[in-house]
Image 1 (cartoon, helix red, strand yellow):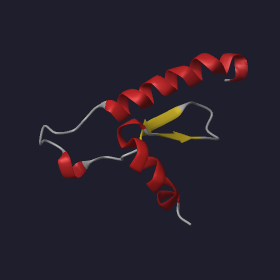
Image 2: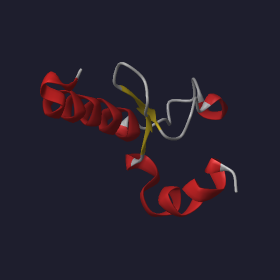
Image 3: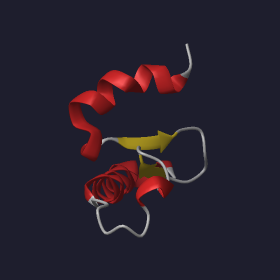
Image 4: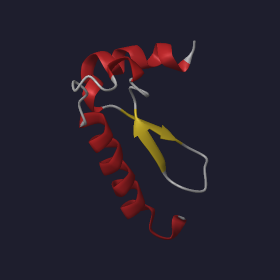
Length: 69
């Protein structure tokens, strides 16, 4: 199973709120789970919800990391 297949149920339930987290890096990395959204770029219809969720999660992870970084 590819990771995109596993994300189908998650994106179906909360598409505008899902976040991609990359583990195993020496720094915190989050991104909107929908990808680049080139198909709607420049059309004025994009929503910022997933980007905001990614930023909030990055901050939460940083706040909770303490001395672990």
